[in-house]
Image (cartoon, rainbow, N blue to C red; front, top):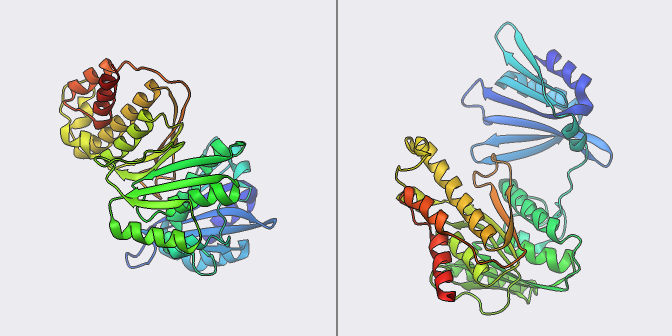
Length: 385
């Protein structure tokens, strides 16, 4: 296999997007899958191995010569399948005891291959002095990514990239941000860092979570680094009074189930201009839904039902926000392989509206559901009449 795949790599080197090795020959081999991607570092092409072991991923950067040596010693000996994706062509290899089967097909990735040839530049670069990420266990003491936290690093970078899309050309001088369900607050600290250190904006960031010990630890870290306008509070967004001042942005990263709805409703009720929300575990509709509409087909099997309910919930959330005057984008947050909760609602208030919601209630009635955000929106309307 080495001569076959190495010949293709040499022929397609500047067009390769990725190579994936899968279906390990021995179950006791430590990695279940290995993905190889090219990147540029200081003008030199290198090849990064992503080696998957359970929920962990380990990275190694190799030269082309080292990649060929690795393939001969490890790749071809331990995997039955390989798939090479390049601009314009897909090549699949299957290893048999006495031969290699090679199958080729065309694709439309030519433009993507050129884009991929550029070095990936993160807003939050490895090696950058972000001390809070050391305390939170994402960076080592020399500001290198801790391998087991690589997915978390990619998540928070992607979140900041999406925020930067909105604010990279902004001239705002101050901003107040609320983070609902902040947990260990990886994102909260980074958002504060982005606005105060990168954008040089006067920022106030407030994180809310249910766990007192987590909140106390986050406040200690904020105090340790002199983050005077970064605070954390124990708070249940579904029942407690949240924040009485002006807020410009609401963010949620995996706020559980209806906690996302209450956070979104807080933004609607208080006319918060920006929302960045990555929903999580949409259990409410799943626990209520019954057959009765045009999509009963999706409710006959548990896996289909779970995915349908998640899409139903988040589609409804997006629609309600749009009807209240928010321009709403639905974005893939990170690759599915890094997190199954990979959908973001990115919203900007354009014009205040008094929405018509009766058709949404009729839709939900067909399926026996009464989603929280819809209930809160109706109560809000009735209160204003």
